[in-house]
Length: 469
Image 1: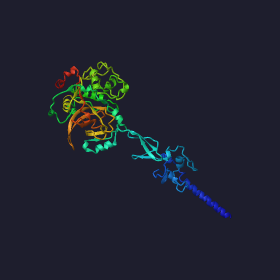
Image 2: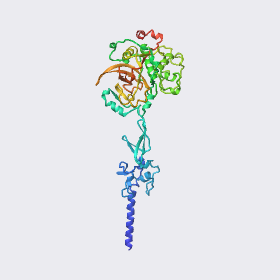
Image 3: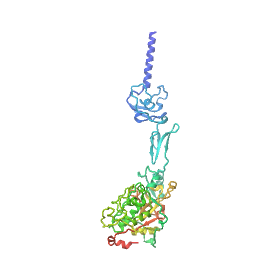
Image 4: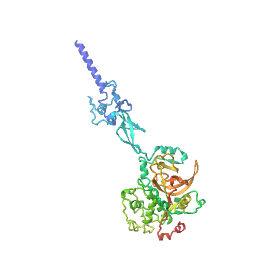
């Protein structure tokens, strides 16, 4: 009788030891495991594993699905970290709270990446969140139209008949189309009265025009302005105006007045503008009126910031009164221009560029234009829906030449245009656009201007007397 009890006691002790070994499993091994990856998974998810010894332990609720220990491959800290249950073990329970995953949802897989619940992340210009949607993981995102659109880029690059290519610019990625339209352009449609600017009417003979022309080749030695970057400031109305005027000062003076005029002077000192309106869109006709009446200083005297800044110079008086350094040309007065004039057609635009220098054009910008990389741009049909709310946002640029190119659709004419989005954009800061068809209204409102050269410089410039309109 005694022997039987002993045997029964021995068997009971043996079973208890075996059960304890099964349920304790890896728990005496140092960690953390689930905590180290901040991971707890619902159901069976085989990838929800952490290396341990020469195998894997798991942080999903399936690791001990039976609750009996017959199927137990949980990581040592699964119960303490994921369930908040302290088990009898030599392993110290985690003091870190388990991840706040509703319903123990582990993750959302989105565009090749894994995201934890309740942790916002960016998808281009939209903020997204992985949420518990009735027991299943779901991605919820804002619905902004993004400035960089992968569909536009892909489609343009796979339609060679369009004649141009597109790319993703890091400066634009993560921004909304609304930001691009309101902060990267900056020109308003001219007033009806301004559209009645004096028009230069000449009977120019198109046969006298070359097939291609570039101001940088004809006037390479006079100090033309470089490509500028207006930044996230609606300033194209001012940037293009000062750029055209700067080049014409250099060309007409035959390089004696190599100058880059101050765009910030226009932005900050324009009458009626408050400081918070520094980067507010403007009208090119008003820019020319300001330069005609008050004149502007040069860039070193009032550098471009592309953001809010008060007018720090006096509105009237010579350069000395504005506290500007005297230029090497001997100029004393601010840089003024004569009345702006409008060019009526393709031929007149070309003759004016060839004789006097670049002209200013105000064009309509569409969504796909922001992704332009190279080629001869023409509007695709990919962005018309997105553009409906931006009917009044325009962009002013500088036309510097023209040319022709053989394409799969035959010979195509183009304008060469300087943009103000930096040299990394487009063709080293320039773009080409279809010519002679008023693409994006680029031939509708084209303006030229004559710079006021001081007398002592004018007397030394034969160009001035030979080419003035």
